[in-house]
Length: 385
Image 1 (cartoon, helix red, strand yellow):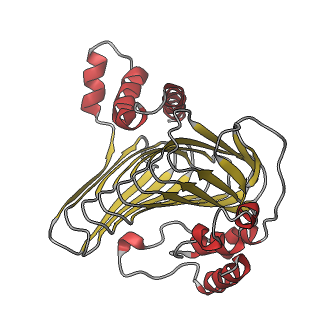
Image 2: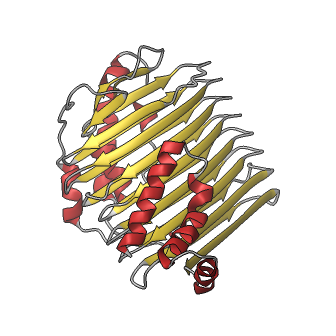
Image 3: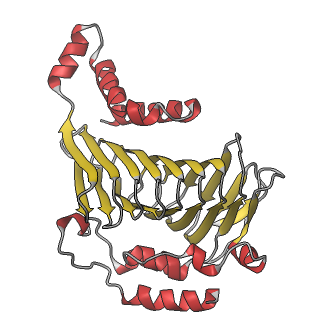
């Protein structure tokens, strides 16, 4: 199929999906209020071009700008990658699972291809900086060859009251590993939709480290598809709400091969009038024998006005598995604060110590400069409380 044929097919699907669909399960019900006007900027976004040459891999309003170095990595627009035979059009698409996913796949205006060759053993972090100051709707493809090891850091910074949509398919080849760091700074967006679909072949490994500063309405989707056997994945995420931000986050792990392993851990800290819904899905297919999959989500509310929900879903179609989940939504314990204050800390220092202890399992495995920046934001949350 050509890219035009695929887009035509996707547009028909996008136009037919209702904005707010009814679901049998409360765990897949829509918890983020959307109107038709919220979607119009994504339908009308245009290709804008690059803002200028910058360091590392940079995109601006979705348009690819430059490659960070002269290595064997390929970085070019999706149009050029298709013409060069580096990718097939269908590689960048996946199943439509809601209205925003369908719109991203049907109405995207730009995007890029990142190709990491087989047997790549890059010790250097691949840094991707996404910037934006206007509405845009883009779709990307990352392809990691077999027997490779890569580390990718994406920093997503959007300014202005914009609506953005960015979907990316990441394909990890056989016997390859990916450490993937994603930092979202979308405090100024009206509507943000971010989708990552990761397809894993046999004997591949994946670690996702995700930090989010949501905007007015932020919707983030992670789909981890374990296609092959002996695949291992992990998602470790954290989100901070300071004022009136809203985050709708879904992490879905789909086990399809035997001897798969997965670990999902999420921490949310909510101050002001911010709100968050976390949905963790684990699906273990009938043929996915000897699978081990675990899910944990903890939300910490700093104010009476903050709202948090954590919803787990486990769909298990065979008996030879190990799977469990745990969720909690709580406030800071007065007993904890009193104990720390009795040891000489003032109220603010005691509160900071509790929050840092809560979030440390997620942020301390990160590179030092990233964890330090996030702890500074934690102090801002305490200050706004």
